[in-house]
Length: 141
Picture 1 (cartoon, rainbow, N blue to C red):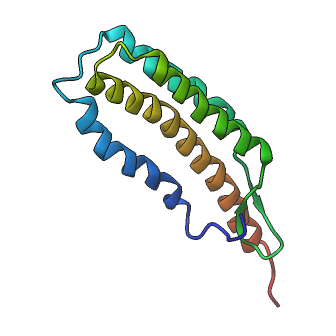
Picture 2 (spheres, rainbow, N blue to C red):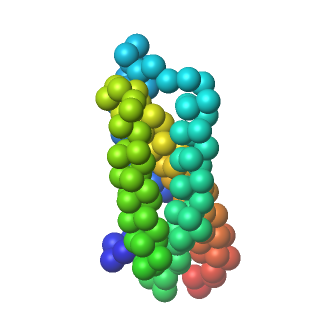
């Protein structure tokens, strides 16, 4: 990333909010009929998809004392694989109704975006706190 991440990292959590609000209406749609095990499988599948995204998301403190996301080719590849897997499952699950299919895919999306963004925020905050500690220890005389 060419630009530093500004502020205290709260912006890393905004995609959760942007996805959570519209997806709640989709998931709670009375026309979305799915068994409990299908919802559980969607959440577990989302968590499994978040693991490689978590592994490949890192941050670094550069000499200008700003925090940057580490550019990582494997992250891009991982994100594309997640997209392809979701696309392939969409074709596999044609027997579901459109409302149920959308609700389950929103559940999968929440299942991987929630842990990925929360753990990314935690990684950022650890680096942010270390930066503040090192700046407090510098004597500017």
